Length: 235
Image (tube, rainbow, N blue to C red; front, side, top):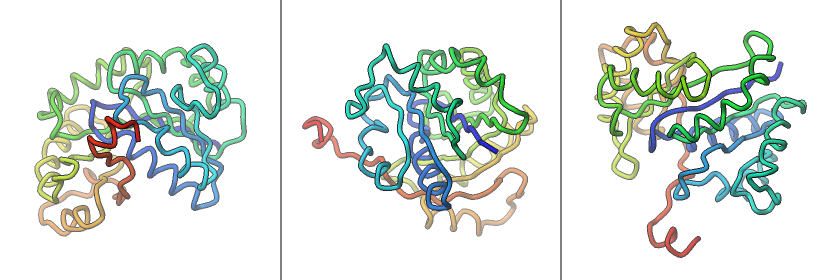
């Protein structure tokens, strides 16, 4: 049965990194995989910078910045329709961390509504190191705003606390009680904890952790690191 996963969350929460990792892992398992890039705002971490990787892994990419496919804002909607019309095993929607990104998802509300029960998951990527995500209350407030714009209800949290190049296991330790509290307050489960393998393993060896608020751990390979020099040169 086709599975569609929508990733929402704050700027810099790690949505695109997680989307890439989910897609690459699924493709390695032999699943027909598609990624829909609806992040039209953030040009620094762009899914379309990884066209070669996705092509090598036989992952289909739909992106408004994917010039190789000739996509523009005017025909983006039709391309996104392939997520529902074609026979994929997994489709991952990477949604921009702002109202515009979430609203771009809302136009496909009827397509999502037509899916069978169990086909759709909506994951809120939480990084407590980002502004507006430092407390359970802020996480839930931001989530509610995103749900309203996207016209979708979050079904699970993904704990992805990190400081990018300065990340450590301590980020996950510090984020754990915050995400746990958000889960308890909302009744929304923690479905995944993610991080670089060495930090994720160190975190999981810690004491006092409740598996209910960890979910399935997913070690992440870093694809999205870009230097400022390369960015300014358009590399």
